[in-house]
Image 1 (cartoon, rainbow, N blue to C red):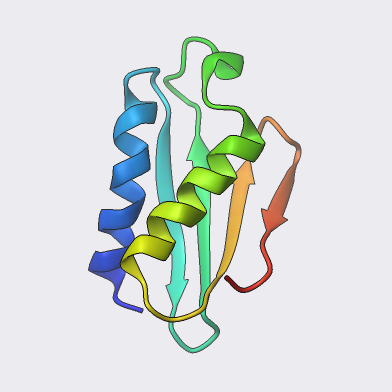
Image 2: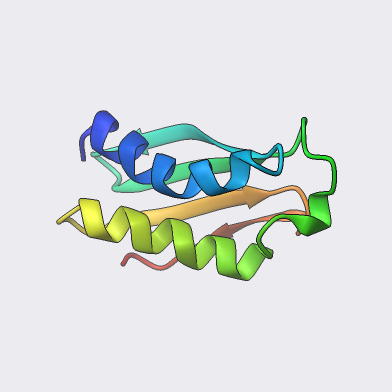
Amino acid sequence: MDHDTVTAALDEVAVLLRSDGADLVLVEANPKTARIEVILELRDAHCAECIVPPDLLFEMVGAALGRQLREEFELVLRDPRSGASRPSPAS
């Protein structure tokens, strides 16, 4: 799990979010635990509810990572709109 590859995959989705003032921030891409942790940053968002819904966002981030990574991984997406982290089973 290469940090640059994970960052590039996240950027595929983040570019869509940035037009609404949101962004994705990589917290951890740990090859030993196969864990990727990401935070949805809403600091500059004008309308948090206008951003892609949490479930769809989770699917989009997981799919973008899956296209770039060949190994299994656990995705944890922290979305302040949902009030909790959402871990995935290993993909």
